[in-house]
Amino acid sequence: MCKRPAGPAGLLVLAAAIALSLLVPLASSPSPARADGPYSAGVARITVHAVPFVAARFEFLVAYPTDVAEAPFETGPFTIHASLNAPIATAKAFPVLLFSHGDGRGGSPLPLRDLITSLARQGFIVIAPFHSGAEPLRDRPRQLHQALDQVLADQRFAAQADRSRLGIAGFSFGGAVALLAAGATPDIAHLVSYCRGRTDDPLACDGIDTNDTSHFILRQAADVLPVKALVLFEPYGAPFDQEALTSLTMPVLLYRAEHSELGAEGNIFALAAALPRPPRQETVPGGHFIFIDPCPPAVAEIVPAACKDAAGVDRAAIHRRIEAEVADFLRNNL
Image (cartoon, rainbow, N blue to C red; front, side):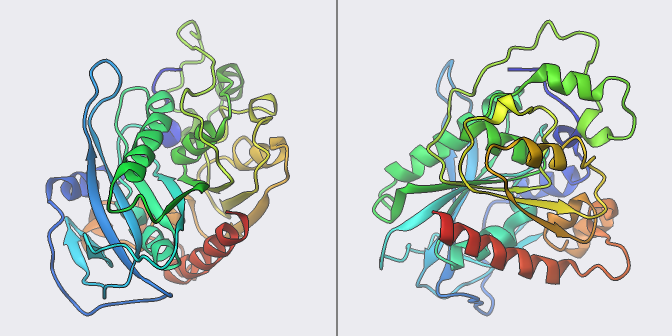
């Protein structure tokens, strides 16, 4: 598809905290239950085993509605407000949301854990890979597809997962992954043209070789999914022009941070103008990392740039607003 890009693909500021979280297995640490919606949140961590010559091994989280009281637990520096391996609620079938985190060189969904579990409480099954792979624009849509297939085949979830109501959400580089999995075709020439000589959008352009495009292969992802709705948080939109997005006629909810380090003109604004169906656009205060959950103290100490907000910016309150808006949007469109 293309070389590994930088920009949102190379956002490494959470690497230390995420690496720690990956080294610590999910282990129960009971504390008082918290239930903010009609359900409690359950969560499981599942491995997709390697398929020779096709796919590498990776893990994903699945968060889902449960009737079991929550027993929050810790993994690395993060507290997950959910019950580990609780049975899924059986009252009805639930829509499914695939979730792609940011950072094209690795990363984790755990910095977005509260949004993921909040959607589980609101009646969604959320599937969030720990993305890996050397070719993220090729590998990550495939990982979303493989994780979905595994959940649909898992006897714990298959009966309650409504495969006909499928959405995808993505943050930063994960926004590009969401677009690819929904059917967008990247236009790397467009990306190269945008980034050539540009110094004012390093999140989008750092590491992009604008002199040699011989290794770029332009094609639609092999793992396009029947998506009914998209939610994009500060998406990496520079690889897509209008022609690249012609098949994306589903409803889109598009978030922008008011003081983002990601250039809006070449990413969020350009994407909004190019989508065939005008998206619903929401703006929140703060920078690019405002969409990451409020940081635990240990993470804030390691990566203050991703955790510290400007005076007057209440990240927790912004997240409560986002959680409600996203749940309503998905209920209305899945």
